[in-house]
Image 1 (cartoon, each protein chain N blue to C red):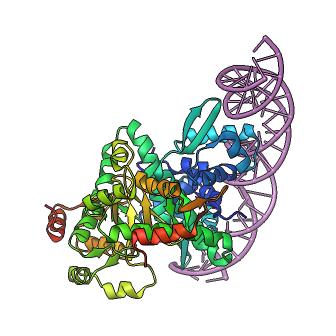
Image 2: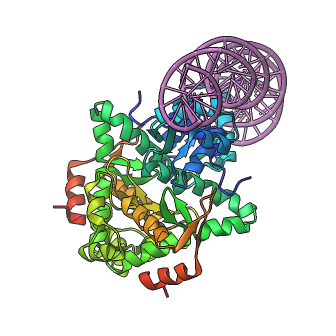
Image 3: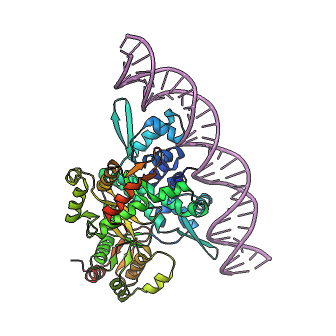
Length: 227
Length: 227
DNA sequence: TAAATGCTTCGTCTACGATCGAACCATGAA
DNA sequence: TTCATGGTTCGATCGTAGACGAAGCATTTA
């Protein structure tokens, strides 16, 4: 109707507790089935089904049928970005009152933000790549420089394959815990999955927490020149 | 309860049509009274009062009493940032279907995003400052370089005064229309208000649209080196 | 085929919240 | 003081959306 986009629709989608729980669960980046999301939200499978169809209708979720399963993920990085932003709003207010527990400390140190690395570790990575000139912020968005291309392929990531896909390669994402940017986009995802493949880190089973192994932490520091 | 912040609360706040209308109205950056917001949302003043107290309770709004009036603004730049992000989500989906009209074109060209310049013009400004080394993105957040300090004061902005305030000086804000960053923070606000004072541009009465004057457009281009 | 699993649809119930009329405070003007 | 204006609080109404039980599809396994 008006010139501005319809905010209320999306707000209402996020505004329901059950749906919000599902969305936060999907922030892990994993594809989850309808029944898993139902458990996560603490509702029966029928109501979950209703919620999921609404979320999908609102283009917040992406669906991938596979056999008799339905795997849901967040629709794209933008959705994740908005969700992180909202978390930042609550964090700014609540965190001051609530004493941050060990679980939150782990979240702040390293967590997954829709399949890419966030938290303190994510920012270190971003800063390193930017500082060494591997990432460029010159013109539009964020770009991978020639040296960055070499570095990344040398690290073991198939950049050409990522470039072939239609999804944006680099994107920055603002962190609610640290108030700084970290690397998102398909490249950000590739970094995380590759580090996991290298055994540097492990994802916690049912949360967004990431735990680095002892050797992985050292390898991370030396690979990216963290003092 | 859980480790992650409580998203649903904020989503629900944004999710009501009346409240959403108020928030989008406040994206203009102007301070609006309760009754103005009631008109904007199309509800009576009583219900508006209820909504406003909820929004304030949720730390989305900042209140400033003045005489028998109550002036509301968005609580901070982060709130504006999140709202723009949500608009971006809807824009990505709806804008493809809906043919963009002249009103939207004006919005894309130049608009106010919580008191700083957004849209195409906002990005030009940001790119220019970054390209000339006046803004630095090295380490944490965004910073004003020495040359940027000189340039800005030369432009007629009292940077020292801004630095004295507790609000962050520079911040980047992602644009939904252009998918690029522009300058937010108190410095971004200062740029907009100063340009308005110089007569370069005029804000539309009841929208977020900004119209540059003919001379203002030329002055803008030469001041920031837009070809 | 039958049985089991994953998910959807239907119908009903319930509860919360948005809305407004009316009365009530508070501030500023006459 | 009295009047007008800006805003809040109370109470009642009403709608809608969320919840689940039960039945219905669909797909995979036996």
